[in-house]
Length: 134
Image 1: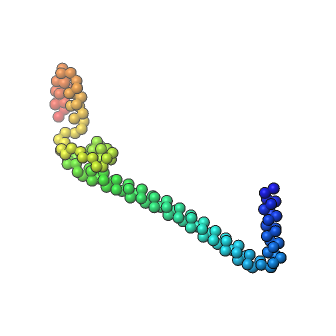
Image 2: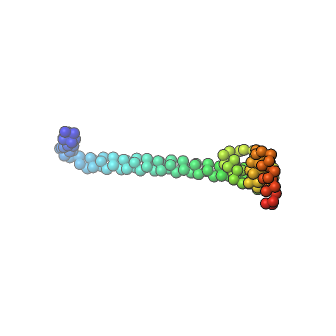
Image 3: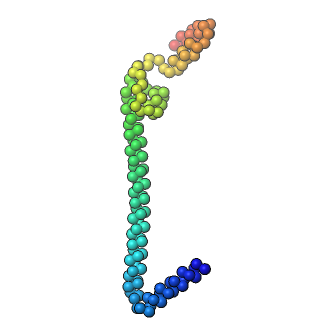
């Protein structure tokens, strides 16, 4: 039913154009409307692409600033850095890590922490075993 009503309206409009002999003016008007629609559509498409590009560029700039901040955070640490320092700097690049120079690897520190939590009789045996390793 909708198609029939649209067809009837178009037939009536074409009949009026034909009766008044204004085909040339109607063609110019139709061409103008089509060109305006194309310009508006392409402008909208270009604007959305530009908006997405700007958002992507801003995210990339933010990522580069974050990487630079992490690198600067790691450069503030004296001595060798390890995974723990990198994780701390990645979590918060503005963190102030303690300024000390490690003389022993992290594994030795972890084993000493384990030894300090064990009983006295096991500590002596483990200390002897770790001193034999070095």
